Each structure stands twice: as structure tokens, then as C-alpha cells.
Image 1 (cartoon, rainbow, N blue to C red):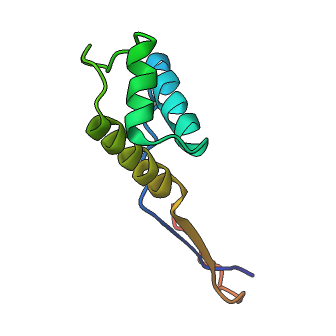
Image 2 (cartoon, rainbow, N blue to C red):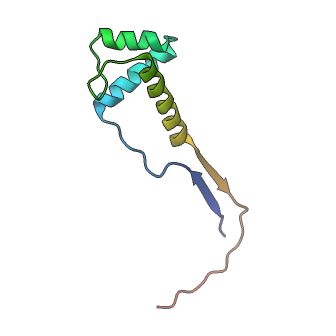
Image 3 (cartoon, rainbow, N blue to C red):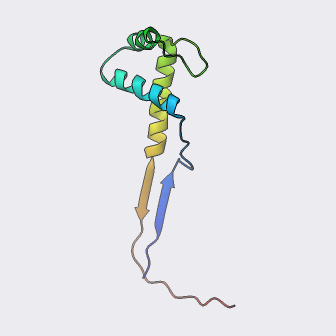
Length: 97
């Protein structure tokens, strides 16, 4: 007896982010989830001396782009569907050696 299984995903691999980048991203996501605006988040980061990966200061637009990319990445990672077919009997095929 067998079942056809179809896995549909947009994720071929999950790239691991460097620790410093994960820290900044998690901080930005946490502040956004707390209800802070993009301008307030950029001010928070800049006041604490937290710089971008390219050693620049954060702007409102950069925070917005970071949040958008993070949400799209999360959506892509979680976009997996598994479809199970109807169970059926298969004929066993002999393999010649």
C-alpha cells in the first residue's frame, strides 16, 4: 500500500544569519511589535550606537525596508504545503540486477 505525497514550498534552503545581524533584526522586530514607529525605532538604535551592517546610522526608511524583508523572509520560510493523496495499492516491481 502506498500514498502519494506532494510537498510544495518556496524554500530550498534556509540561510543562517550571522549573530550580530540576528540581534539587530530581533531588536527591530521586538520594537515594532511593541508598537514603536519606524522613526522611533531608528532613533532608539542610533541613540544606543547600534549601526547598520554597513556601519551607517539607521533611518526611518531603512527600518521600514528591514521589517518588510524580514516579514517576507518569514513568510517564504513558512510557506510549505503538504498534500496527501488517496491511499492505494501499488504493484511491486522487481528490479533486475
